[in-house]
Amino acid sequence: MNPEPDRTLQRYARQMLYPRIGEQGQKRLRHSSVTIIGCGALGSVSANTLARAGVGSLRIVDRDFIELNNLQRQVLFDEQDIANGLPKAEAAARKLRRINSAIEIEPVVADANPDNIAAFCRDADVVLDGTDNFETRYLINDLCVQADLPWVYGAVIAAEGLVLPIVPNETPCLRCIWPDPPAAGTSPTCDTAGVLSPVVNIVASLQSLEVIKMLIGAYGELNRELFSIDVWTGRVRNLDMQASREGGACPCCGQRDFVFLAGERTSATVSLCGRNAVQIRPPRGADPLNLAAIAGRLPFDARPKRNEFMLRFEIEAHEFTLFPDGRAIIKGTDDEARARGLYARYIGG
Amino acid sequence: MPTVSFTRNLQRHLPAPTTAATGTTVAEVLAAVFAEHDQLGSYILDEHGAVRPHVVIFINGRAIRDRTRLSDAVAPDDDVYVMQALSGG
Image 1: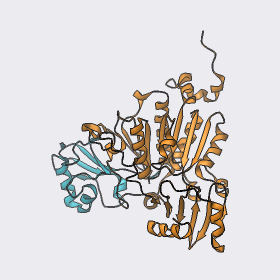
Image 2 (image 1 turned 45 degrees about the vertical axis):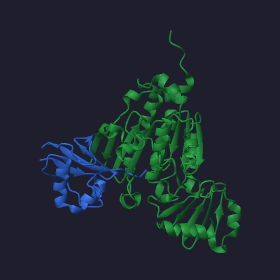
Image 3 (image 1 turned 90 degrees about the vertical axis):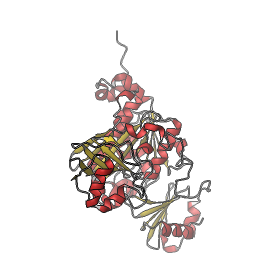
Image 4 (image 1 turned 120 degrees about the horizontal axis):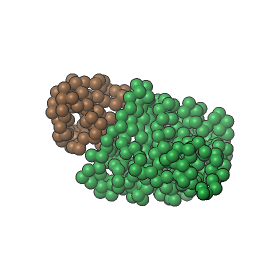
């Protein structure tokens, strides 16, 4: 006699009908945990997919807040979120809890860096890359290889996208394929090339699928090739990367030199993709900020607005968004030195 | 002759048309392309002639083994594809 079906899983009935998942796979998803680093375009599509699929615990890490030009592709957010001044991680969590109240959602409003990324990925079964920059991706790669933690790379620019599941010490890691990120100004960004929503949805959906395979233990069924798509032309390639891992020359998984995790390659200032903005991150160990006190010190025409997550004000034709951990996003410039100067003058440090 | 093509994101920076090029190794084939499009060379290869670390080259969908001397063999009907890492998300 078959055991009584678990009625709490009925919302996933159509997914469980797929034989490679079934009720057993669905139960494994319920007891699984995923950390999503970055909740912009890729991260919000992936979080939506994984929450609806019934992954039991999602930790969503994002440093950013929502802007009108995000809504074209970042599916979890709406105009009301912008009016409420919500950070992306918090807005995503609120939306996802309405979609699936049976799972745990933990929003983390923070910039993933060498000091905190291990804590963000602790207890995760898989890490999903939803970031928009090379630095954080190489940091994720270092952490996951060191911790033997599977992760799924995904990236998009314009109409092109890439997906690669990475099983440390088994499949090529990010640095096996691209030993170092490109120098600043040598690679297209959202600023220069834009991004189409369809490629975001395809890449994030495939990232989510590879995560689901990992969570149910279907490692033998991962697509171990680098998936590449150009949605405008319809050209799809599956690229065999195995030669990249041969010889143990990879500085990360071969030589185990985790320079990004050690902070040796991590800048404190970074220009944000597509934003005409610069992020400033305070030094390691900096004390948290008193946003109310800072707001009180600002010039009268700075028009400060504050909630529990951030302080926003305008100065010298630049919009500052300041977070309690000392991080700031300064809009109106791509000049990192200019941004550092503004930070030093109005925030200190 | 082998065919050499480039990711469209590279074409955003530089003229990088799909080209039929002579040669029996990756180095020879790329040299033939760069003879027509010299700016491409410095973007894809470093000053020592090695593949830049953010670029990867494939022959018929398989990543090349020799990123330093580009000695991987190329057959007349092969498809050489050059792509770079993507950052957006």
